[in-house]
Length: 238
Image: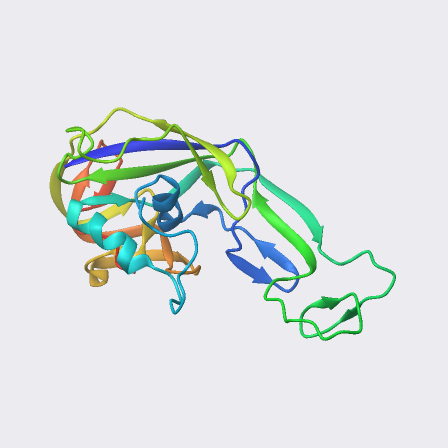
């Protein structure tokens, strides 16, 4: 097992609609590992648009090859975080308009319903924020030149905001068994093989899967250093 620690620095305000509170759309203080996986280019064959007859996310199709290759990305946990609050207004400036089926109509003709808000406020992850995540490479594909390259920059969020990825020195961890281990970072609940091993945790209830923080659990772990532990049995579960 090789593990690549990475520091993520936001070069622009970054927005994910993690939670909606009335007209306020909030980005939770994290970046999910599914979003990171796509942004890092680990699913190069996923289509930008769904084909006719397809519906819903393609997580199973896109992530199954990564499970077979032994590649996995953890959620990104912010060590330094700034938040930005702004407003948006998508309403028309025409002389005549009316609300019609969650859409703003500029004429008397019937309009098609829109599945997005017309106005409100958004709370974003601010530029300069810094987070840490880990890329796990079970079969040493990256080191052998058979796996993906490690990009220095990626795009994230609904605005495709730019972020820098500072890859740290590769770590070859050793495996330990503990009855009560404190996990310093974030874990995706759907990606844990044995959720019964969880002892204590707090939850960010976001889609497509809850993200856990302040986790204490038992089982087998990869020990990167004196403070950093990652569960051994993790793979994409959605």
